Image 1 (cartoon, rainbow, N blue to C red):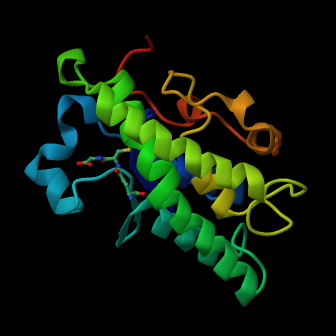
Image 2 (cartoon, rainbow, N blue to C red; image 1 turned 60 degrees about the horizontal axis):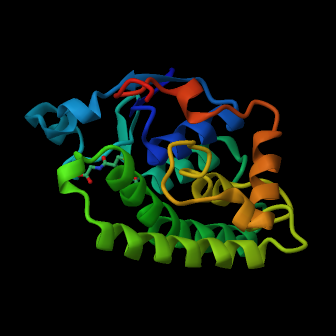
Length: 210
Ligand SMILES: N[C@@H](CCC(=O)N[C@@H](CS)C(=O)NCC(=O)O)C(=O)O
């Protein structure tokens, strides 16, 4: 049965799930959610996900939310992209938690505030704080990637896919790949993986391209 992913193109969190399924070779299809026009605020959507968040994955009767849990589900289903031993799996989880808290958990709101929030609601101070936090997390990744190809194991895993969730978007939010050469090279490696696609080639946008 084809897995359905409730998603929209601007969502780096949805991208993590979409790219994981794509690279694991799972049959899936997007269900477009018009996020910027209130589609996640409806009672119907809240019944699907009480957290009111994208992404939501539906596999038959099974509904899973939280991108990391969806990614984990796909590795269990396919035995791909999740690490080969218990030690590797813990290392994968370590970087996924780091991503959710310090990388995507900051890059997502920063990118939203910088590009999609109405201008009168934007706060220079808040965005400066978020950018400082993001750069410090990227510096951690850059240091860790010195002499390594991938974050958690000797192969691409869902940890890499989580941490890159927001880093292929070109809308400006203060992230400059050239400031982090090891991250830059790692993003090139991810993009060179057979089957890789940019978020906007996997999922429909909720807003027109600027
Ligand atoms: N930790 C969650 C974050 C999901 C998330 O924040 N999704 C955004 C779209 S990218 C959203 O739906 N936000 C709505 C809200 O925060 O109310 C995940 O990884 O799935």
